[in-house]
Amino acid sequence: MDYGTLRGLFALLILALFIIIVIWSYSKKRKSSFDEVANSIFEDDQQDKKRHLDKDSKQETNNNV
Image (cartoon, rainbow, N blue to C red; front, side, top):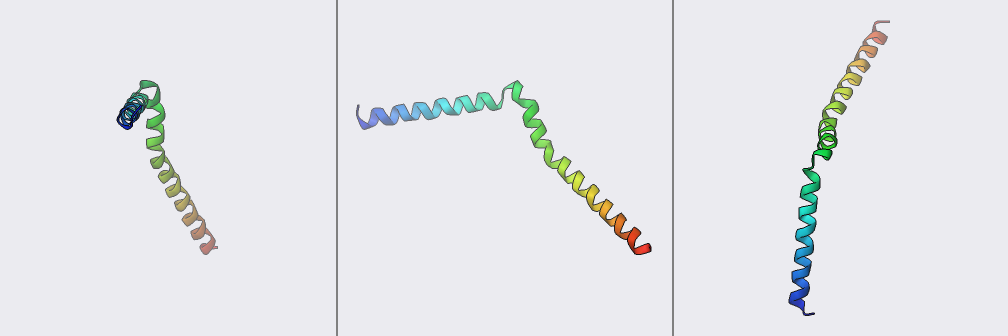
């Protein structure tokens, strides 16, 4: 087996892995999981805003006492 054949086999392996990853990432079974992860950043942001508002309201209550 010469170097050219080895490079060709390696290229086919990389191409096969790429095709497998593309099929896996666009499969319908994974869509809900990916959507959930994609929207998680917005959920965290909303929770942070709520905590910040709660913290501000507690500080105002303490300052008024």
